[in-house]
Structure formats: C-alpha cells, structure tokens
Length: 297
Picture 1: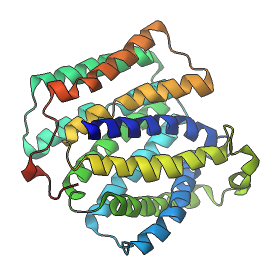
Picture 2 (picture 1 turned 90 degrees about the horizontal axis):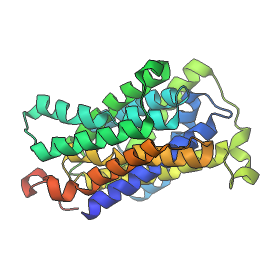
Picture 3 (picture 1 turned 120 degrees about the horizontal axis):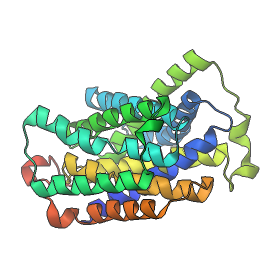
Picture 4 (picture 1 turned 30 degrees about the horizontal axis):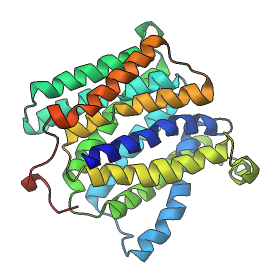
C-alpha cells in the first residue's frame, strides 16, 4: 500500500511537470526543453554516481533509457500543441497499452476487477478532459505516441531494474537520456540561448528556470527513482493504472497556473480516477509474489 502512495506522489510531481514544461516553452523549443532538463539533472547525478561508484552502463539501462527518451520527447512535442488536460488524457493510454503488451509478451491474464478499475479510471479521465475527438490534432498524436513508449518503459523497468539499486539505475538512465536528447536537439535546432538558465530572480515565479528545476530535480531525479523502487513490489500493469492519477494532477496544475478550469463534469471525472486508484488495494492483486521480485527493496 505504501508503494502505491509513493507512486501517486510521483504522479503528482509529473502532473506539475506538465506545467513546468509549458514554462520552459517561453524560450525553448520542445527539443531543447527536454535536453536541458536532463542535462541539468545529469549535472547533479554524475557526482552521486561517482561517489557510489556506479557510473557505468549496460544493455538493460540503455534500453530503458531509449524508451524513456522516446516517450518524453514525443510528449514534450505534443504538450506544445494541446491543452494540459488533454495531454494528460492521451498520456493515460499507457494504462491500456501496458496490459495488452504484457499479454502479448507473457500471456498473463487479468482479473475482471482490474479491467473494471481501468474502465472506471478511463471514464473518469474522459470526463476530466471533456474529450472531443473532433479537436484531435498533431500535438495529440505525439502525446498518444508517447503513451506507447511509456508503456514499453514500464515493462522494461519491470524486467530489468529488479537487481539494481533504484538510485543507481535511474541516475544512469537520466544521464543517458540527457546525452540522447542533447544530441537530437543540437542536430535539429543548433545551440540554444543559455541566459534564461541564470535568471535567478525568477526562480520563485513561473519561468523557464523554475520549470527546469522542477523537471530536472523533482520529475527526473526523484519521481523516476520512486517508480523503479515501487516496481520492485508492484506489478507492471497495476503501475500503469496508478499512473492514471497523473491526468488528475496535470489538470489540477493546469487550472492553477493556466486558468484551464475544470467543469462540473471534469470534477466528477477527477473523482472517478482517484476512486479507481484508491480501490486498487481492495480489488486487484497488485503485489508481486516473492519469485517475481529479484531482491528485497
């Protein structure tokens, strides 16, 4: 139960990250927004990895990094062209993609109560975003593609991150994503302006520098470490269901910072999502058996 609460807290951080990403768009395009986020995070993680003697990489962490980079890059491009609430909805499709991909990979069957919770949460997300497919645009397509990569990342973490320390694995992942994102941004956009990163007077107000602090430290370093820690004991398809609460938090922060207010239907939708997540311990077999977890965490 405590790990589900931790995952929900990570979703709150990522929900705030949607707003933080918008702030970085004041100056930066989606490519450098993503790259600078992880470069800043890498500048903090490298000393820790050196201190822990963990500055090394292997195939599993590289694969997870590729999926995470692809998901975040597609999501960042998409956020620029859609609302925070709608981007939260489309990202939530990983709750559908993950169990389907796991079924294709392992043939695992799911309880009917699990699909009930997924359906309840998805109904809630649809109400939350007042989804209208008539307005589906290119930005929405990018966010939907990101959901597929996030599903692959959840499954890869479930398979490969069991035998490593969550901090080591995530900080290695952060560094690799930073290198990939920087290479893409530089090749496509050239050198970005760096002066907004030193506007310390704007650090306590919505601004690019505050956005990067939130994205680098909280979203990249803390929230993804929580995910890896929690997945040592929580099944991957349940993780994807908990992650649906991210849509609630993204809509909440969109209302606070961008005046994207929720209608009564949206409030009902948010309540349904939180209800579905809250029912997980009672209606789903969410914990892994000892044989499914390689080491204690």
